[in-house]
Image 1 (cartoon, helix red, strand yellow):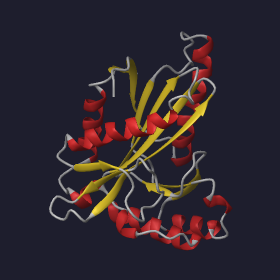
Image 2 (cartoon, one colour):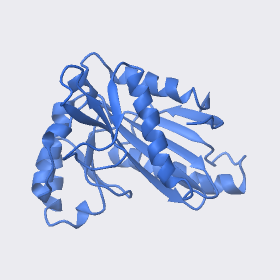
Image 3 (cartoon, helix red, strand yellow):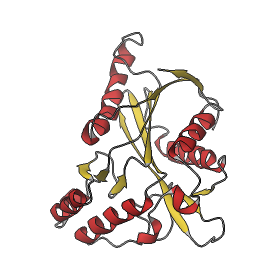
Image 4 (spheres, one colour):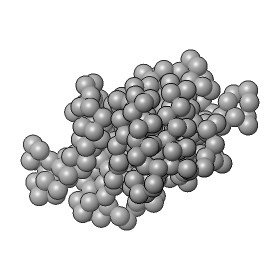
Length: 246
């Protein structure tokens, strides 16, 4: 990824609630409309990187909400302590919680569609680079049977069992006329909880997948913490952007 200018960093420390946190990313994206009119507008969104630890959430895709078993899947999420929400982006259900990080990258852009596919590959490589800086064997690409299948998922490989691979990062993006939002969920800790809620929800929706693809960084590298990953992400970003605290 080439150098890309200045980026404001907002390390969100207080949750707005599962729904509120998800909505706030869209609110920041809407702020690019103001930026297009007046970059000095205090409510405008300039290029921004937002990082936060999410509340336990099972984020369903739009297609999931039309399945006969969707209601049962929502109930399964509630039983496991995860709030079921439907996100505006595509894909299938994905889970994250306080052992995870969500990274929202928002930028004003007069032509946000033009590089939408390139964005998927570029950010996947960036996040894989961040994980590798911690000694994690990370690769870009789907693994067979993974939940919320994506061509640009980032998975980790067990250091002593190369056949054991776990999806660690899923990505999604949304564009409006004046900018784009690229959101990445990174599962660092609490892998068993992630597997349980996904297993119950996918069973309710009768979706085939391999539960062994779900988990967290600590299932492969127990010594890594959420703080380690957050610092690694910011360190990698700093190689390509001029970071400014928001």
